[in-house]
Structures are given as C-alpha cells and as structure tokens.
Image (tube, rainbow, N blue to C red; front, side):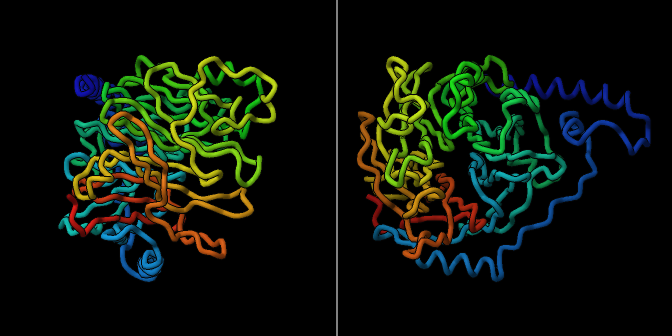
Amino acid sequence: MRSMMLAALLSGAALVTSAVAQGAPPGDTKSKVDDLEKLQAFRSTGTAPAPEIPQTGRRADAIRRTLSKIRLPEGFKIDLYAVVPDARSIAVGPNAGVLFVGTRKSKVYTVTDRDKDRVADEVRAFAPGIDFKIPNGVCFSKDGVLTVVEQNRVLSFPAAEFFYEAPDVAAVVVVKQGELIPAGEESYNHTARVCRVGPDGKTYIALGQPYNVPAADKLDLYAKAGIGGIVRMDADGKNREVFATGIRNSVGIDFSTDKTLWFTDNQVDGMGDDTPPGELNHATKPGEHFGFPWYGGGQVRTVAYKDQTPPAGAVAPVAELPAHAADLGLTFYNGRQFPQSYRGGLFIAEHGSWNRTEPVGARVMFAPVGADGKVGQPKPFADGWLTGDGEYLGRPVDVAVLLDGSLLVSDDAAGAIYRISYEGDAK
C-alpha cells in the first residue's frame, strides 16, 4: 500500500515537471521555483555536492579518548563509528545500512561505510539544496522510503539510499510547511519531532507540546491537533488522526514485535531533583490518554492541575525512569549479535539533566521486556559520559540497531555516532 501511494505521488511529480518546464523560459536561471519544488519535479537544482565531514584529526581523537572511559558489561566494546555534527535521530537504511542522521539545526547527514569495516568512510549533508528546519525526525519504511519530520513539515524521499550521493534527490512533500501543527503554536521549545513507520504502513509522529505545563485554554486545541501526543497518517499525509494524547514531550518511539507502540516521555521540570520520574509508556490501542498535564510524570500530580480530576482511564507508565535524566530515543533490540538476555528488550538513550542540582543521565539504559510485555527494571548499560565532577563528556540522544546487530548511539554534544558491539559468546 505504501509503495502504491508513493508511486502515485511520484507520477504526480512527473506532471509537475511538465507544468514547471512550460512556466520557465528557456535559459531562465532566475526561476521562481525553489529547490524543493524542482526536486519534486525531477529537475536539477544546480546545488554543489556537500563537503565531506572529516573523520580523522583532533576531534576524532578526542572522542576516542572519551570512549575509553565508558563502562559496559563484560564482552561489549564501544568505538567511534562516525563524526557527525549535532547527531540526533538515526535511521538505518534497510538496503545497504546507510545511516541518515537528523539534527535540531538545518541539516540531515548521511553516513556511509563502504568497506563494511564498521567505521564510516564518508559523512555528508543530505539533499543540501533543501532548506530544512529542525529536521530531527528520520525514519524508514521497509521498502526503503525515508521520512524526514521537521518542526512543522514532513518530507519523504523514495529510494533515499540510492539517490543520497547526489545533491539532487527525489523528494515528496507529505505535510506542507506550517500544517503539521498550527503555525501559531510553533515554539523554540520541544521542537524535536521523532517518527516511525508502523506495521500498518502509517507514519507515526510524536509532537511535543511547547510548555513545561500548558494552560487549560490550550488543551482542547492540542488534543485536536495531536500536540502533546502522537499522530499517525498514510504515507501521502492523508487520513491523519490523533493516535495518543496526554504526552508532554516524547522524543523516542518504537514498535515491538506484537505491533504495539512504546515511547519515552520527558517529565515536568522544576518539581525537585528526584520528582517526578521519567516515563516508559506502552500504547496498546488508538485513543489512549497518558495523563499529562494532570500527572507530571508517573503518578505525581502537577501543581497547576492537582485539584482537577484526571481523564478517566489515564494510562500509567509501564516503567519509571530516573527523574530529569531526559530519556529520549529508544529501540527494541532485534539483532542477533548480543546475548539472548538482550533480545527483545529496550535500549534507551538518556540525554542528561539540565535542571537538577545533582545531574544524572548521559548514558544508555536497558530494560528487559518479556514475551508477556512486562518490563523489568531499567538499568545502566553504557555510562561514563557524566563525570564525578558533573561534567558532560557527551550526551546520548538516540539508539538504533545496525544491520550486523551492533548498537548505534548518537551524541549531539560530541557530534558523533558510536557503535557498541559484542565479542563474547552470544548464545
């Protein structure tokens, strides 16, 4: 179904080619058509290839020195996979394992390991002719379509793994600029969207709401638009619906083998060092409400809504995480390289505190998940980016499984992608 939708979209783009060509005089180098419109019409933008990001030198050496301090369970090791400025969400290409890495700035990067030695050979900006605006969210469909979710727009790139090396790529506008959320609700806060293509072929997008705790007069609008929730839509942007509400700011979503959605949620700030807890949530059906803003995290009530009755049936988190550790990206481990005890479990990236007198986080957590969906106690898996003096040597953002079963970790502070591999007996 998703392939059919995109085939139709690309057919429409071919019609745009003809219309654009008729409207642009021959030799007119000052066409009013912007680069994105040209890419939709399969026309060259004249954009030069993006320069390579150096993978050697002082910066890479400094990152490797930091990695020598990271603590891991026995049998595991961590290496620098790629230097990627501002690296955040990771999407692993299903065909060749090319990485597409989102940022909170204006670029999406591609990371290529041509000789498969598990170290990047080349890192460049993707589609440099496009003016991206906070393209944090990146995700792939099984048939190789890349979706990029910006602050207030959604784009898709059919066959991205095969077009990415040229500055001009096939592009489709799924949601126009200013239509993912109402333009009047755009903010500098909680703008990092994340996405996943679900087992139903729909694109799921988490939309953080911009406040620490929103005023009551915002709630109806936010519930309708899916702000402070998760929305889903067809590959072409049609049939949009709000899938889940009552979420403060999720920056990590993934699907389990039973086709249900799991996600992290960042708790309310300013309530103390140890309260409220962070959340790991499990959405088992459409239409569930996860408690915010009546609950600030776990079962802790917010000050603003403590005297108001929460929505009936509000879903509690399946696991509580350390307060103010900023749990962001998560992924189910579906590889075979790691020992059996990790398979089917969740890896969670903790970005680290900003409003805590004793900082925590800056590590990768692991939570075992049983066949019955019950979650074991999350525990640190990789840590050491936060020193005993409270200095952050790095801040993990996202986790993803590489095609060989190793685990990738992004770090926007260091500007890097790490690779964690296992060298012991994986039985």
